[in-house]
Length: 148
Image 1 (tube, one colour):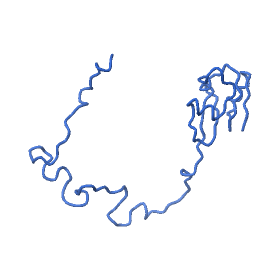
Image 2 (cartoon, one colour):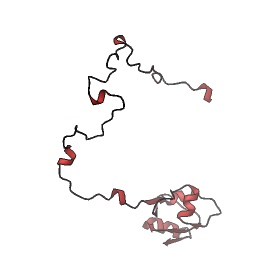
Image 3 (cartoon, helix red, strand yellow):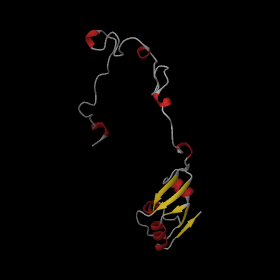
Image 4 (tube, helix red, strand yellow):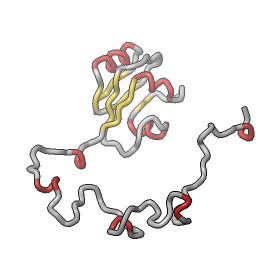
């Protein structure tokens, strides 16, 4: 199959809805916007939860609990099997090396190595955390697991 041989699936292409072109088209007069009011005007968009100036329900109800979502620390997670994708010449592995190789994102706070997969060569791995199986597999392959 070549790019010029590709065809759209049946139903993928359909005519654009033409509004305001007479009642016979099915979208005439108010163009599918209902009657008058704020939502009938051009450029209108009302944020979710807005109740027309009345005190919204989400502000009436009591809020409890704690949410740390905005201030959480994101730790990059990598499996042992992914270390095999590194170049053969690499012997020392840390977050910078993995970010350059495209295995983790550079903006994440820490690095944790998990034990899924196999490792065959000896590597000196530096990370913030290791799972027990990951540490055992790295040392069984003749490498070092250094907690930094």
